[in-house]
Length: 216
Length: 216
DNA sequence: CATGCCGGTTTGTGATCACAAACCTGCCTT
DNA sequence: AAGGCAGGTTTGTGATCACAAACCGGCATG
Image 1 (cartoon, protein in one colour):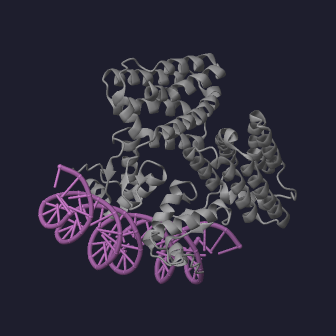
Image 2 (cartoon, chains in turn green, orange, brown, blue):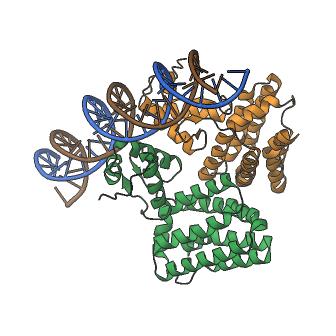
Image 3 (cartoon, rainbow over the protein chains, first blue to last red):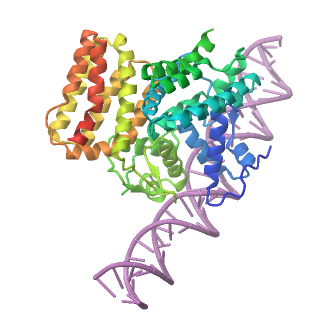
């Protein structure tokens, strides 16, 4: 399948385009866990040679978006339950800190934007669309965390999201829930009230709720 | 300069060797901040072509060991004070958690090993050898955190170390201290006592002491 | 029917090359 | 003397190729 996702990129290197597009697909759950990829296949999809495909894949492996077998074969990761618990704990640590740093800078326009995004999350849930749900959910979090003015921490959080992307998709497929995430409402409420302990708790709860999906 | 650090690697791809060696050099402060590198230069050093050099560099850029200019030139990062503060905060978050998870599994043999490593840290300080100091210091932390059985968190912590490597070297050069790190003793004492709050405080203090170097 | 083997095929690795852009050095102009 | 401009040189990018190892059929053998 030819994707032709490159609209005559002026100035953007081919490997960067491949990297960005693949990264977005993985992060948003477009690929299932264990999905195998080949350099020649990626090159074919993006109409480039193996060289840029290799560089894009190498970057993504370094970020944990893909795993690499001993023979160099790449595929999306199949996370063990222990690994999922770890990544959720990392999300809790980093994102609680990001939310806490964003709180003093969160003015009304931001809160209203979060409200709007949260409505999109609710729509994705009712439509049972995994990719849309994940994308809207991450946009909700990223919009809040951008206010923290902490790019290194945000990059770390995104790396964790990237590693969990395929697993999130699989988890969502198992999910029987049709109501929008309750903790997003708590996050918004805590932001409105300027309630820092409440915000920390709400973010931690929201971020670790996937574990309850897994266990229950 | 030819390094010839490849002893006829059987089964290890060339790009992997270049990656590992460069990564170690950056993490341990062998390169100053802002050090420029070229693909052809790396290839010459390691006696490989540009291809494996490019892949190794790409991985390291993805991990934050190098920064890349718009034109693709790579160099070690020159961190702003804000960025340093962020990375120190990340270290505090992640490493306190790692230490906390390692505590229940820390038996006497581990504590004695930490003691030995800490003596090496002290020696490096008296010799005023930045690379030895950084290497021994990181070995101290890694030895403890390995007991946490949390590979994803440890990988995150190492990524932060990697990003701070060149800056740590520069900071150490400015340092006028000749006594070994006081907080390592507190960490060991807390491990011996099974004192979790004390351990968390000691690790947080040790990890953020670089900031005091910076400010003072 | 299960198991091991053996062929072709696929795949990652690394080298080399052409090319364009960025870089740098020295000179010239003002 | 300072700024800009042109030359050659360095550098990253991407394509292509050769090669070896891994993979995956089916078939033969127990």
